[in-house]
Length: 270
Image (cartoon, rainbow, N blue to C red; front, side, top):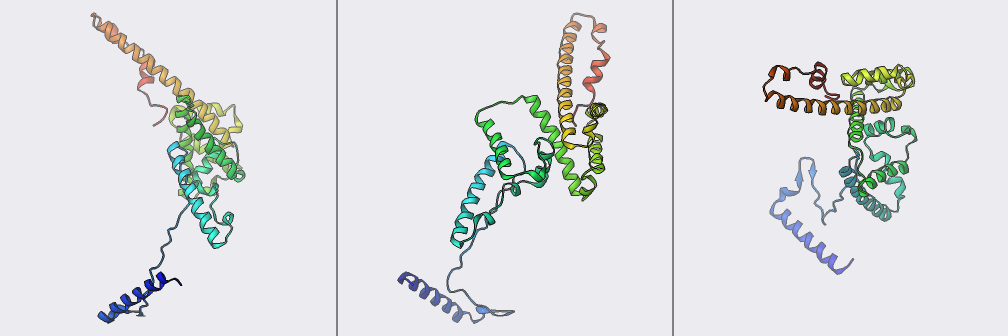
């Protein structure tokens, strides 16, 4: 023990003794005598592995930063305790939200959830980060369409798990039931298109991954059709106003019934 430690312990002991003499009940508790510590007790901060709940750029950046800190702290503690860091550190797969992992493996990633590895997940994360780093601008219509469909499938998985009915939609005929439910609750126009497509694509009735591809492609087509109709309707309305300004309100009030019904009807997504 060094001279500095001896001085620190002597001062701590004197202070504790002084407190006990001034207040004899200070070391008493309902359960019996209370032992006061001689030296300050160390406080260890628990560092948890970051949980990835979505694949947005900001979330991934923050998760990678926190994971770097988590790995550094865990390695240091394992080294001081002479433990194997590989047995302690949390894997990349366990750092993902379970529902998100299931949704991505069912939809965008062509791999079963049982076959996922840490290397595969880190590759996918780095691919997303590299696209932003290289300033690759994706097709915005494809981007929004895919995100909407993925969010819908993800919400369905969360509802199934939240209500404890996962076993009803696992495999075989049960998986067909899940696909049927997914199609049933799609927005009206998209649901109709998907049902019609499944008449010729029977394999998508029993595969969530294939159903996702069909739904995503049709959602993109429907989005393009809706935007084209909106642009066409906007032009016709402007020309009608200019024409009515010259006098003939009767002619300008006659708008094509088909265009009006599509414009005022429900959008592909609620």
